Image 1 (cartoon, rainbow, N blue to C red):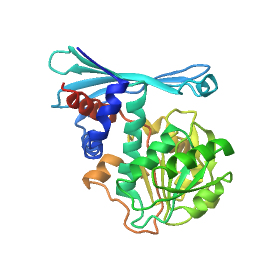
Image 2: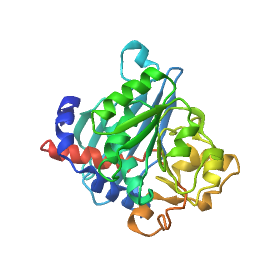
Image 3: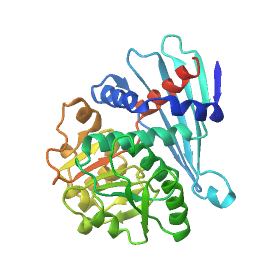
Length: 313
C-alpha cells in the first residue's frame, strides 16, 4: 500500500488538469453511474467530521474520505481543516493508498467545483467577482476561477478588517485587483459572479440586494445547520442547481429554502446534468442562478485517483 504525504501531494497538484476530471465525475454521478451512500457526519462541540465514500462504475477504485473542520483552531495556531483519503481496489478490496492530505484535497476539489459551476452558469461577461469569506476556501475559489473567468476585479467581504487585509494582500499577489467591504449588501449590489465560502449558520446575503444577471456559487453550507443565503435569493432565481439532489434535500441552501417554503425540490436541477447538456444552462445574461455545492464523494474519487496515478500508482 502506498502512503502519499501532504508534501508530496502539494508537489503533484500543479501538474494536474483537474477541471475535466471533476466534470466527468459530476456527469457520471448525475447519469447514475456511481454509488454514493449518504454522508456520514459527526457534529462535535468544537468541530465537525464528514465521511464521504463511493465509487464510479467501471473505474479502478473506491474511495473513503474523512474530513474535519474545527474552526476554533486558528486561535491555537492550527489549521481548521484536516483529514485523509483512502483508495481501495474495486476488484479485490485491497487497500491501494492512503493520501495523508490533512484536508488539502477536500479544499482543492471544492475550489475546482466552484470553477466548474462558474464555467457553466456565470454570465458571459463577469464585471466583478464577489467573495464572501477570507479563509482558505475563499482563496482557492478565486484562484481556480482564473481558469474559466476573464476578470480580475474582486470585492471581498469578511467579518473583520484584519482578515480582509490579509486576503487582499494574498490575492493581489496572484494578480487580482481586490477591494474590501464590511457591508455584505455591497457584494450582491456590485458583483455579478458571487462565491460564498464561510461556515456561517445564518444568512449573510439578502434577497433584497439581489440584482438581475447574478450567479451565486454557495460552497460553505455543507451541514443542515449552516446557511449563507437568504432563501428569498433562491426563490428569485431562474436556475437553482445542486451538486447532488439527494444531499441538497438534507443540507445546504436548497434544504434551507425548501424548508422555508421558498422553492420546491422539483425546481432544482443537478450540476452533472447541466455539464452533459441534459438540463438547460443559463439562456440569458439577465437570469439569476444559484449553484449549491455541498460536496459529493465523486469529487473525492476524481482527485484522489488523479493524485495516486501521478504519484506512480
